[in-house]
Length: 294
Ligand code: 6CS
Ligand code: FE
Image 1 (cartoon, rainbow, N blue to C red):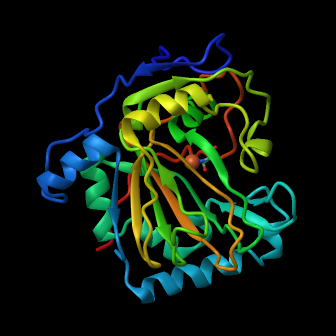
Image 2 (tube, rainbow, N blue to C red):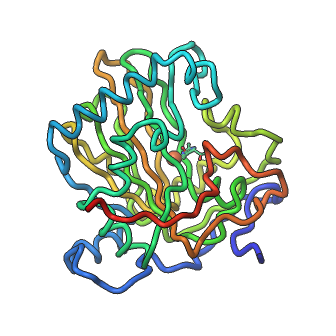
Image 3 (cartoon, rainbow, N blue to C red):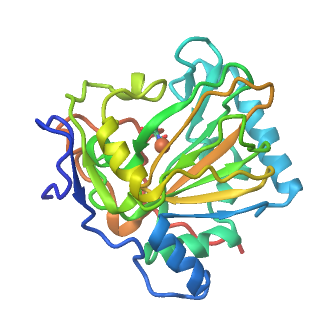
């Protein structure tokens, strides 16, 4: 596959134009015309309290249990905070939690995702980021697609993420920040990708991140937004949206579950960094299309 988005290991950090559409399919009624236009313009949509409190409670119960499961804690599925032993994330939660597996096929979500990605989709990655009170560190600015292209072999920009709040996300406990319109630019970053980079990057990412000049370019054009809402609120953001978050020094956990849907027509190839593929729990190679919950 030709590499349309040369990134990393390059000599300079540059911003090039996106070479994929943002909307991959015609309207099928899952979104309004205005919502489609907003997604195309900004690269994300926010739905306050999309899920009912009961659905959130079930998800939180199952995902909190994973953070105490000895088998999970002893495995690579669990990622610790960079400075403490606190659990930062658990990956592949759609396989460990029946509630998350249902969420990936949720009627309020799957039809919207299939419309935005133009057809059948599968789960590329899932994780819970606990961002515990006091200990939960931030995530530096990055484009997920830049990592998934270089380290997982995702050919084109035809994937999107859900960040579903399981605890209230407020302006103080480290909400996800996004740069509207940033999905329209592809940033080439510098830095040689080390083998098994994920062992560091999931704790603190330092390679494949934008320069201050690149961030200034994006922020001058789109500003910064931090969509917040009560537990059950959903942020759908395009795979190339620049996003990040600060640490959480409040007592209030900011626990969000993330699901990434990829088009079955955009299935992973060989990583463009020339390194071996990342493990299955980070980048799934099961491309079985999802069916909506009946
Ligand atoms: O490397 C990845 O796939 C993960 N890294 C970040 C910072 N966001 C996306 C994903 O969880
Ligand atoms: Fe990310």
